[in-house]
Structures are given as structure tokens and as C-alpha cells.
Image (cartoon, rainbow, N blue to C red; front, side, top):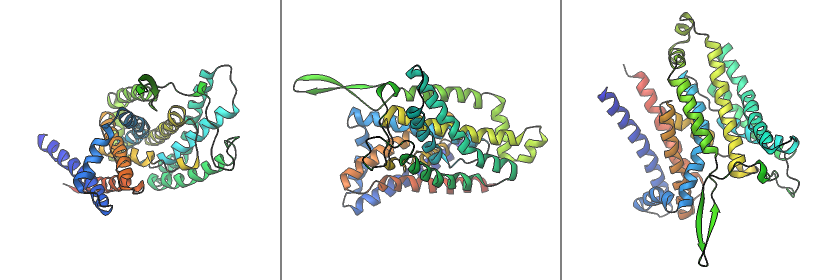
Length: 353
């Protein structure tokens, strides 16, 4: 047991080291020393309270997607469609806000969230059914649907949810304050000897997600569901012989993964962006969620820790980008290398006798 723990610890230290090394190499191309690059990457996220709050903002989105990915992973399934499902959730949130009128803002917000979750589930349904009924690789189908979702979002921004004052740009209207999630954290700012309180982008979405994570932990890690999903992940035939309805479980967890990604899109629009534009299409939360779930070993708690670390890395990467003048892709150098290393180590672990 202890030997296995040390092995996994060594694997994950290697994965993280590869990511840091990748970023450092890119930084040297822009004439920033490795020590300076690592200093910026590691310290800048905590250089001021606003940067630290941004870690939690990214954590909320990444962890919400990663929760769905981790639950699917428990059944041996990979939902790589979080990118597209997130977009569908965001679009439907704004669509419902624009066209649906209800007696109260609270009811409208509830319907916005439920609509985002429902339509993201529908988006995840074809890969789920194809996998359950015909054994079609869910990685391919969910990944390809991300491309379709990007085109769908561009269509929506140029049509149904296009802002009245967009002036030719692909941008939605801004959500009214009554349809936004309340701000959770305000920080003091001193200007001219006077103290004023400034809103951060951290909303009550993080509270919603943490409560949901506890519920999912109890449901999927403290009940027979955990055993059933583990048997399905090992072998579908054995699961069927044991009386487990494999098709129902496969479709169920894939739909849940889509629903959570759609929820992430709704909460990010309602609590952070308040609008959507074409620049938000390549948000990256879907792929970061896959990495977080893989690093967290499909554990609800482990995925939370890995999501927090990845959020820290993203904020540090953005600071490094500003310091070097590099493109935003510098962050994805670390993420890509970490994903690659994770895949390699998983392959070696499976082959190990």
C-alpha cells in the first residue's frame, strides 16, 4: 500500500515537473530566465487579493466540468465534450434570459440554469447512446461535437442571442443585475485616502458547486453506485453477468457529465461574464476539466485539488504571458505537456503486470 502511494506520488510530481519545465523553456525563448519564469508563475497568483480570487473563479468553472468527467471516468468513459457542452449551456442561459419572461427574477434564473443543464444533456445524448448501444468510441464523438458546438455558438451570437447594441460584433446583451449571481467577495480599495469596496468576479457559484460536490461524493463514492461503476469500467460483460444494466449506467453518467458541463457554462455567464462573445469560444475549461479529473484519479476530492492547482497554473501562466509578451498559448504548453505525460503514465500503469 505504501509502495503504491509512493509510486503515484512520484508519477504526479513528474507530471507537474514536466509542465513547469515546458513553461520555463518557452519563457527562455522570450529571454526570461528559468528562475524568473518560475518565480512569476508561482508567486504572481498570490501577489494581490484580486489575482487570488481569480484562482477560485477559474476553479469553479474547471471543477464543475471536471466533476462530470470524473464520474464518467469511474465507469471507464471519457467525456471530452465538456468544451462544447459548456458553450451550449452558456448560449441557452442567455437565450432563456432574453426570451423568457417570468413573474420573478429568481424563477427566471432557475429556468436559465435548468435550461442550460437540460440542453447540455441533450448535446451529450448522441455520444452516450452510440457508446451504450453500438460501442462507438465516446472520445471521438464528444470531441467532434465540440467543433459543432463552436459553430452553433457563432450562429447564436449572430442570430438568436445577438445583442441589440452589438454594432456588427458577435456579442450578446449584458445580463441585467437581477439575473446575475450575487458577488461573494468584495475587497477594499484605498483611493485618495478613502476606502471603497470593489467587487471581485467570485460569485456564489463556488458555493453551489461545493455543495453539489459533497452530494456527488456521497452518491457516487459512499453507495453501491461506486462498485457498479467500477465493475463496468473493468468489463462490460462481467457487469452484465452481475445483473448491472450497463447501457443505463453508461447513458446516465454521460448525460450527467454533459449536464455538469452545461451547468458550468450557465454559472460562468451568470456569475462572471454576464454576457458572451466570440472570444469566449476557446475557453478551454472542457479540456482542463479532463486533465483535472485524470490527475485527481476520478475522485471527487482529488479532482478538487487538481482543479485548484490547474487554476493556479492558469493564473500564473497569464501573468507570465504579460511579463514575456508571449501569446496566451504559453499556459497551454504546460497543460498540453501535463496531459501528454498523464496519458503516457496511465498507459504504462495499465500495462504493468
